[in-house]
Image (cartoon, rainbow, N blue to C red; front, top):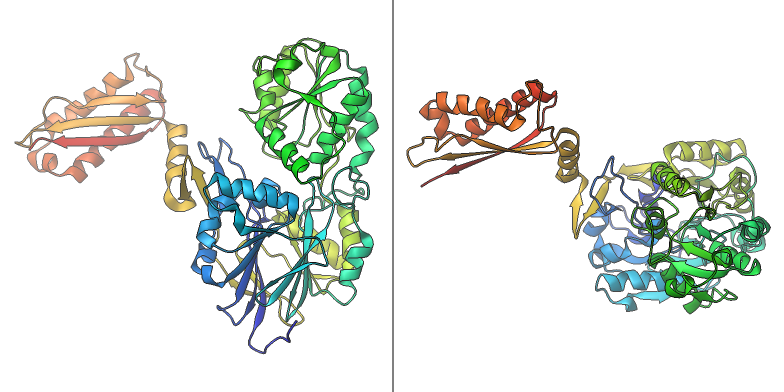
Amino acid sequence: MSAAKANDRLIYLPLGGAGEIGMNAYVYGYGRPGKERLIVVDLGVTFPDMDGTPGVDLILPDIAWLKERKAQIEGIFITHAHEDHVGAIGHYWDQLGAPVYARKFTANIARRKLSEHGHPDSVVSVVDAWPQVVDCGPFKVGYLPISHSIPESAGLVIDSPEGRVLHTGDFKIDKTPVVGDPFDHALWEEVSKDGVKALVCDSTNIFSPLPGRSESSIYAEVEGLMRDAPGMVVATTFASNIARLKTLAMAAHEAGRTVCLLGRAMRRMTEAAVETGLLTGFPPTVGPEDAQSIPRENLMLLVTGSQGERRAASAQLANGSYLGLKMKEGDTFLFSSKTIPGNERGVIRIMNQFSELGVDVVDNDGGKYHVSGHANRPDLEEMHRIVKPQILIPMHGEHRHLREHVKVGEANGLSGIVAVNGMMIDLSGNQPTVAEYIDTGRTYLDGSVQIGAMDGIVRERIKMALNGHVVVTLIIDENDEPLGDPWVELAGLAETGSSNAALVEVIEEDLSQFVNRANAKTLRDDVKLEKELKSITRRSAQGEIGKKPEVTVIVSRLS
């Protein structure tokens, strides 16, 4: 690399994934302030919930800062194929326009996402593992294989004139991961030996005090469950966890069960893993029609929906049937997964539905059937010891995770900084400093339209969900006189209030009294008229049902 110039700087800027778990998007830049050449690491999504984002399909990072600097972007590097790292690439590529780089399996998934949005999949270049590097302006970037809960995960070696940065991506220390790359201690030690300016590091499991466990450690327990269960076994896990899919399928096969895959995501991920040569030795599978003719005690369904998703295969089975297959008393349903915080209600709902059918539900059960894909505290400390960075920058975690990670690093002699979304860190020199703060937030995919967090659409939807909605219509004739009385339509409100009269009639009567008393000046002023009609409607509803609904007033004037 060329030597650093006096007026140039190396920056790190998280736009998503720092202060939250999900929606990862990180930017590195080098050059004169404001003129830096940039690379983007990951473009992910997170998922909505009915409490805070009703009706929203996906949540994406706000990339307004990046779009304004489109001409400065040298490349987009995807560390692995989880949705919170690659899910936004199809939505955002045309707004950024830079070449996309990934390892083979991740590139396969990224190309599918680009094609779904009509973008050319030729923009994705496959990069082999280290020591291959990509020259991107002032940067040289290489992929360091690392173990995680999806194949071909990788950290990044990011070299600049100001020094080397290691970006771990999501990782765990697993030397026997079943599918994918085992953790290579010597490789990470080799790339760190000449000095690392900054380690930008996964923080997800910083509060887990015990060393992480290998994916291979759960096989015996899973095989025992498959062998001993009396009826049909249905298992769910993250569709992207190819190693777990193989563990479940091989254990079922060894126990004499035929495997049937259910769910679009499950099929898509296994197809990608087979196409890229990562998934080998997977037992033969059958389709749902053939599965119906197999004795229940000889069948295992591998299904989507480990997080309680309403439209996934597990939820459909809980509701009665899916593609002709039904669960019955004596069957077993296995959650070979961890419930992501926020998804508990959906998972518990499905568990109870299965229980009502007489199905035995088995969850993680103290770690028998699931291991995390993220490094626990001892493994994070091991990474610190291997890399020995000048600066520790935690990422991929809520604020409490980032702060705790810095504390752990400092206890072991590392200098760290808590950098949350929008905080641009200057990594030049010997100590990190906050260069500036960038406005960041979220954008929402609402149907087929992207909307901003400040557009008010989601906020208005929440108000309607909480308070109900009333539409008031009034017609004014050409002489500025009411043409009949106002009429009212309700949505999401009780039909009868405390007076035992219909709520519509009570509100309409109160509105009619006002309109019939209103003077000509008021009836000519749409703004004042709307304000009064809203106020009366809310006051009437409050008196009758104890709620102040959202109100839409339509005043139609005849010319």
